[in-house]
Length: 187
Image 1 (tube, rainbow, N blue to C red):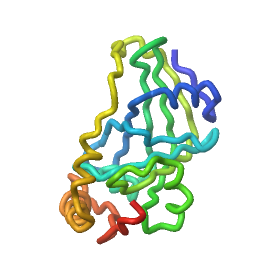
Image 2 (image 1 turned 120 degrees about the vertical axis):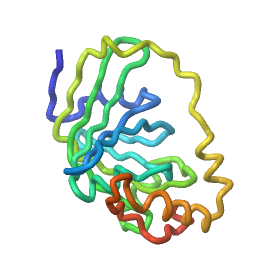
Image 3 (image 1 turned 30 degrees about the vertical axis):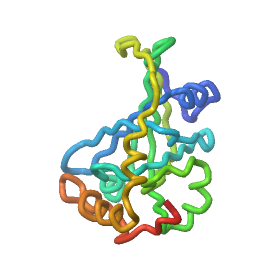
Image 4 (image 1 turned 60 degrees about the horizontal axis):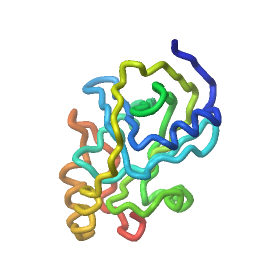
């Protein structure tokens, strides 16, 4: 049975911090819904109603495009081991980029991941838990280093070129708000 809460409780935070993967869902008014898996050491619970996650350069930038149109976001965490549980965080989010003043305060919360592109701040207005009994049991082996290795091999110019070609628009053609260049010392 699903239970709802107005804020992240300590037991919720403990569960969130143990999960090696989470999923982010966003959508614009039109076009495709985006659901992306996230890993690495990229999420922080900042308080009972605020979460931050660091996003690195990838094959797309759907979340950024969607949030510029509709700031709603859902984060989902699943127990793949131990007791079954699904936990969702609902709320409004905004993007912080390396060129923004907030970046200076937020970036030190995370390890310096190569290719860091944005930090998303989610203001949580609802926490929902449900049983998760249909989620399979799986064993976590280790995080992948592939994306970090790719980013380490790219020069600043190559990374910015890639972002302009692959991350400036969503798959539906919406602008993502990506600056023309990101200062490599900030990412």
